[in-house]
Image (cartoon, rainbow, N blue to C red; front, side):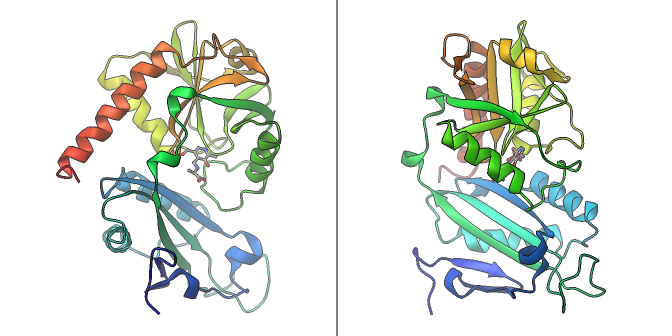
Amino acid sequence: MQASQADPLVYLNAEFKPLSQACISVMDRGFLLGDAVYEVIPVFAGIPFRLEHHLQRLDRSLHAIQIENPLPDKQWGEIIERLLEQYPHQDQSVYLQVTRGVAPARDHVFPRQAVPTVFVMTKPVDPSTLPDPHQGIVAVTLDDIRWDYCNIKATTLLANVLARQQAAEQNAAEAIFIRDGHAIEGAASNLFVVHDKLLITPPKSNKLLPGITRDLVLELCDANSIAYAETEISLETLEQADEIWLTSSVREIVPVIELNGKPVSDAKPGPLWLEIRALYDQYKQKLREQAGGR
Ligand code: PDD
């Protein structure tokens, strides 16, 4: 069967095949135990955005759960390139996942010789369906009920799923996790606040995912002499913040205009967000130009 827009080509365990034919065993530990890690990589003008950063984080996640990286970076890049060819004129989002593989029996202990399951897919992003970041989003705070290895990009996302669902039921687009009185990150995003004119983001630790978009925001700050601090954000600081932003590969950099039913400042994107967002858009535009205006 031929792949098509409705049934795109995906990569599964060394084969390219239509999504409808990509099957794994029910004994796969990713399915049974959530024993797997993943990455989400945005693609602009045909170029995977910060691919090497995503592959480095994948390598760190794999190392943390004792799975050997099944592919060298060059091969990851080639697989992604081949899948991207399906939508040459659209921005895309690549999803990749590595599980510990299939074991003969369900057992928490690692199987002796499992071969990792490798899955990659891409989907086109229609910009007209994306929310306008200038409108901002609504967020709520929730207790962080996750585990102590949030720096690993594990597919075991039940706490994040439940939090996002709870937020959605309150008409909010994101939940911000609170742990020991401190704001940590969103259910699927990193957190920035502007307080007393200073941009603050929590430092990297086992409590949060080291976001690729977070790193880029800090790089843009460094390059443009914008002061920031990587320090803990108390719930009080979050509630009194002049600006709150969330960052991710899917949402890019988005301002929060309402938190727990209360407006953040005057419920409009703040001046520092406007500055950073413009720098980010310029950075992306340069990338598009380098890609030959595709
Ligand atoms: N999530 N924190 C968490 C818990 C996340 O799940 C994500 C991204 C981020 C932001 O990381 P990055 O800037 O590298 O996308 C922070 C992805 C997009 C997801 O799960 O779909």
